[in-house]
Length: 445
Ligand code: ATP
Ligand code: MG
Image 1 (tube, rainbow, N blue to C red):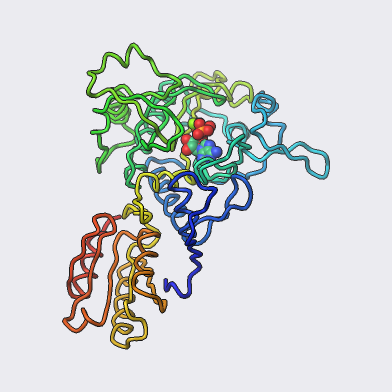
Image 2: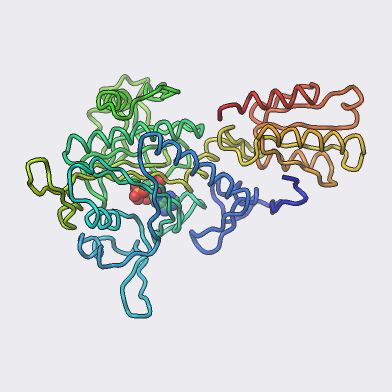
């Protein structure tokens, strides 16, 4: 993309309403624009990041055999009355009446709707196990929407639902989701720690939240610092293997890691003092096993191998896709701006022409730009007639992980400069070498 043809409404001033870095930087970098409290428009560069995160989520869910679909945002209140949650959900639920006087609502989550789809389509144990998921906008009328997309009223969530014949099978689905989530967050360049959590309105005994440690996080967390040494890495895991998924869960939940809701001071005190940590965290996902909580009231039953009608065992599993954009920035920024992890950067390489209008610089930039595009490196070319300082400031703000700088002086000796946004280090090399280097960095991401 050429910057002169793009829509990147960068703000010079720090917006007064933004209290935390990610909110400030998303506004300043022209990624989002508030439409009303807790509701945002995603401007082009914000949308690029959001889509990239969605892609990673889809890939990791489908790798585990989970099936994508799409349910609507607006739901009928009737199903929620059947489950008993219409009244329980309280003021967070946005209730709507249509022209015929029917009660509708903007879905805060989808357990009822998916269970309805299941019960009207599946009747036999032979159709199990099944895990369906979608990535869809949710609405929760939060009392205090704040921190930009981190606590919005409208937000994008991946929510997945597993249907299994037995508790054991459903617990395998639970473990499998834990594995997919570990992979998903790591691919985004984030460490998200599974912590034992509280069931809340969705209910259930088995639940873990995934937390990214950050000072601005809204949750208070307590953990054994040894847990931060664990990496999932690029293990090749057989998602059908009960033992393999259980092994990962055991490994990642062996150490103490809990939110304040489930914190146990006595257990915590048993950890050697040097490893005992309390901190703040951002909840970027949560997994639940809740048994037959919805299948019983809603009549989601299957006939088992003995001919008996049994309610299915279910779980639900959510990833806060739009919140993750904020969480990524909280974890990756400095006082100049965002520093995107390579795997999620909206533009992988920034190209800065130090002297727009200089025929040699313009021609070389055009050549490098085409070369980056040909290698799939999605460049952002700053082709504005601006001072070098202003161009660098924009690149630093929007956080392309790598920058190639082209100027008449360097070109005389046949070199451009390649700069890492994270380390700030620059190296001179030929344009071809810079292209190859960038291609190597992003290979396989
Ligand atoms: P929270 O405790 O932060 O209110 P929750 O536990 O109510 O979240 P879940 O029902 O577990 O949320 O939803 C799954 C994920 O959706 C959460 O882990 C979080 O990442 C994201 N999420 C929930 N509420 C919001 C919100 N208001 N804005 C942005 N993301 C949200
Ligand atoms: Mg939660």
